[in-house]
Image 1 (cartoon, helix red, strand yellow):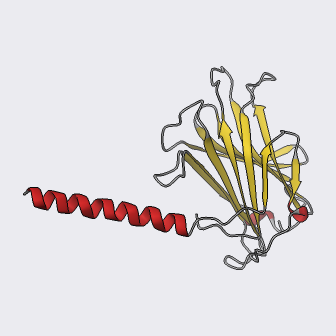
Image 2 (spheres, rainbow, N blue to C red):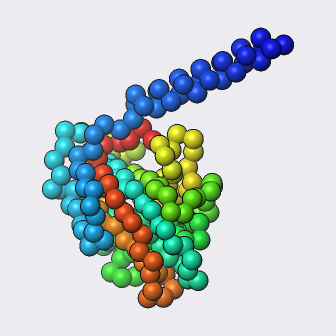
Image 3 (cartoon, helix red, strand yellow):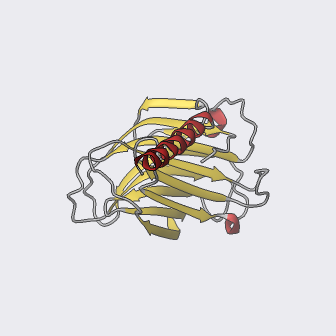
Length: 214
């Protein structure tokens, strides 16, 4: 009986090791853009980033996030901002998390909120610790889903191998051509008042013309 239990345990550890090794091997290559010290006013233009990647119409961005103080009676929203030019229906997308444990996306056009979606967290978040927020975006020019557009977010701790804290995605196809020039930035805002507990963002990475394995 003990031998059977040891065999089952050994097989289980073997699968865990195999999955972890596979995830490491197919992980993202070095980012095209890396910035450790961040300012909420920074705007990084994708057109200014040089890359050898060839997946036109795609990009991925990643940032470390830490919020020490969640004791707020009002709703706060933190994350990444995508500014898009050349589209008459939308000009920017805010995607991230709120302090009441929700993944949220806002789609704007000329200071008008066009669409908003929210999804509750799937797992526990530890306030005061570093988490990772990754954004994946593709527009109509991508080769895998031609004529389709989508934005998605993963929010996780560690490597994310054991699951996400929160996720959200929105199909953007109905908004037409989103292949125009794009800039990526960070934001932090209080949805209900002017007061704000500013989080800490660090280690922004951007992969241009790249479709991530995740």
